[in-house]
Image (cartoon, rainbow, N blue to C red; front, side):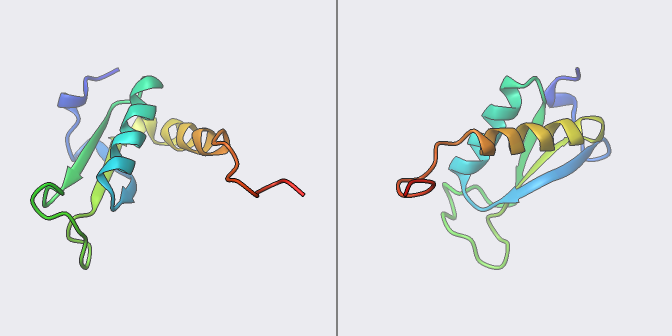
Amino acid sequence: MEPANQINDEKAVVLTVVYNEVEANLIKTILDEAGIDCLLITQVPHSVYPFTINGLGEIKIKVLASQLEEAKATIAESRENLPAEEGEGTE
């Protein structure tokens, strides 16, 4: 496994795009725990520009091309394991 600081745009592909720094860091943590290196790429830090207009402020989450399918599966599994929201699935 390659350290995250060695991932570059030539080897990395976009896994997903999010518009919230908390969500980006949550996905990064899930991937890190699964042993998948990732990069969070943004044009403008949310601490400087805390809202999104026309894609400005979006956060791209990139992984190595060789780990893309594993990363997708890891995120999908994580979403499936979320607790149901109150009122969902209960009658």
